Amino acid sequence: MESEITDYKPAFQAEIPIIRLREQDWLDLIGEEAPNHLEIHARSFQETEDETLAVTKGYMVILNGGLLSAASKFESDVLESDHDDTTDPHSKRKPELNEALFSLLKTSVNRESIFRALDYINRAARVLPPKGFHPERYSPLLEMLAETELINSINANVESETITKLLSTEDEAEGEKVARDFINDQIKRHLDGQIILDETTEKNPKSYFKEVVYQSTALNFTKRPGFISSDVWQAFKKHMTETRINPKIVDIDKDTPWILITFGSIDYQQEKILNALRSLKESGKRLPDIVVFITQGRKTPFIKYLLDLFPKASHKYIDDSLRQLQKLISTDRLDLFQAVYKDSKRAEESDPRITRVLMENFAFRQIFKR
Image 1 (cartoon, rainbow, N blue to C red):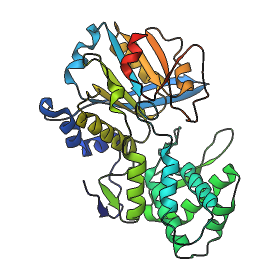
Image 2 (image 1 turned 45 degrees about the horizontal axis):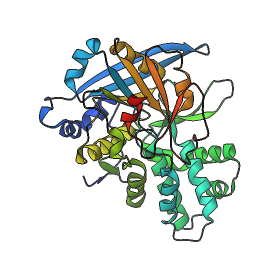
Image 3 (image 1 turned 90 degrees about the vertical axis):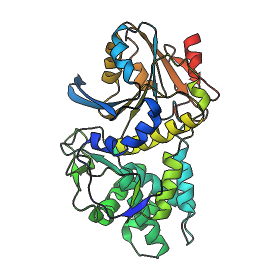
Image 4 (image 1 turned 90 degrees about the horizontal axis):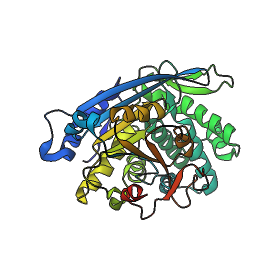
């Protein structure tokens, strides 16, 4: 679908309307057996970790409506797989995006300085919900807006002390702070008062952008806001949301329940998941039965919820995050697998209690042969 140019108008105050915006895309994936309306289940969990109350929020998009009614009686294997850098390789995308953005500059600028500045912007482009709950959420809207402003300013030879510092700072913490100042001074004005810069009250205070209204910075990925340049928008969508999934990875029995899990901002994660599932369908491969979007908190309580949902089944969970897997080591009925892509940042991490699987030329079916 061709993106349209629109002025920024906050369109959302919750996650479900963001999913509903793409309801027809989901129903098209389900195909002939699609219901009249997409089935979405919201779940939230509270737990105390390190003496801090943590709230986990998630949404289950149901692609196989018959699975939930049979879940309590299912006695075979269930597969739960993470998405980013597990089912779909993702870690090499940011350097490729930076290359594409660098090519948009019309003046001579040091390549290393620009790449550092873009990384600082990425680190700073995070928002907290109105009540300030952590972890912060990555905001493609803030990042693309800041990238547009930076590129346009450099190409127009705009003199800016902040941009000069952004390009010259080599310390990561200081660079992130400068990028946050750049967004606060130059970018925030475009957003009609939807974010404020606030300092957290943690042991080590740090400034974060905070939404005034929940989900007010969420993007509609079918429409380009007018203040994001077409070149930046197209580069981001190509390098950050188009799928690179290998269809062979989902070579598993069609009767094995498959639950695909992702964590992050609902607008961005949904765009990536839809693109990945379209690719699988076009390749004649099966789709997951359920897609879980975790938008706040931690994956652990949701994984345990899925185990309770299928109380008689054995479960296989694969994720590239060793830290996430280690939190589940003592969990009954759960076999853990660490997804490893060659040359990824996490390739050197290992734990003898967790089975490592090399994802190049890997298929989920291999998990069930172990």
